[in-house]
Structure formats: structure tokens, C-alpha cells
Image (cartoon, rainbow, N blue to C red; front, side):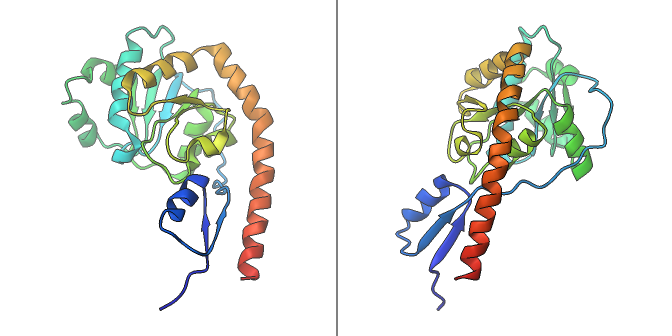
Length: 226
């Protein structure tokens, strides 16, 4: 039987979960490196939109977020859309049977995408106004870091590991509370708020890149000298 003497993990949250298993070896947390994404898109976005990725996975909390968007649209005067990846028409039709989802709002303001390749996803990140990350559980939270690569502010859950990724440079909501998510959309749809978060990200992200490089070197050193 092999013995594990060290574990590499991508967040302090995961570290604490491992410690509860009474692991006796060395646990090394590090920031996960986002996949480089490049967009060749040069045109301005057709619509202002929130971007939500991987909506087909229940843990991503899309149904509550869709309900929150319908609530937000009751008072929205900025013509915001919701763009969602990973959702088929069949899956969306199932969501529309939920009594708290307004079908007319979804048909007019929600645009769904199935699988998107790296270039299309990069274009969606680049052109969105705000990234939505209302997940119920994450071991890290890579998509908000990917959005930050494009300087895009985000609305994020305050649960599990997600607050470790961008710290104070994202707007937090309760992912179990529809009103909290809807209020987050209202807050982050204001242009002066978006600009402020973009400024904070501009200062924050280079520091994150530096830490990612340091963490990577530490991990490589630990592996080589294991």
C-alpha cells in the first residue's frame, strides 16, 4: 500500500477539508493557474449582459440565478441581458416550468449557448459587463479569475473557497438567497460601480499573477525535492 506524504491543494478551504480527514503529511496550498484565453473579437458587444458559465451543472446554481434575473428585470432600465453557456434548449425548457421563472422575460432577455470553444468563451468574457459566479460549492473558483484576466468585475458567492480567489475585488452575494443575487445584479449594473471594480481589478490582478508564478515555482520545487 502506497503512503501519501504530501498533498497539493488549490485553496485554504480544501486544505481545511483535508485536515478534517486527519491527514498526517504536508499540505501545500497554491493558487490555481488560469488557462490563457485570447479573444480576437474587436467589435463592441451587441448588448449589455451578465455572463454565466456552465449552467448545466446543478452546483453552479443556475435556477436560482435565473429566478433572480427575472426579479432584477422588473426594475432594470439598462436593458441588461443574461448570456449562459452549457445550457441546451431542452434544459432551459425544463427550467421554464418552474413557476417563479417568467417565460416572457427569459425569451426576450436570456441568450443560451451550448458548448463553446475557447475562442468563443474568451469573446464572451471580453464583452460581458459583469460575470456571474453564484456557485454553491467550489474547490477554488477559476472562472472568476478568468473573467478578471479580461478586467471584468464579478458577482460571486461568499461560500467555500470562492472568497480566496479575488478577495475584496468582487461583489459577494448569498447563493442560497434569490433576493441577495437579484440585489447584486442591481448594484453591479450601475456604470459607476462597474468602473470602480474595474479599477480595483486593474491594480489587483498583476499582484495575483505574481503570486501565481511564485506558487507555481514552490510547487515545482516541492515535487522535485520530494
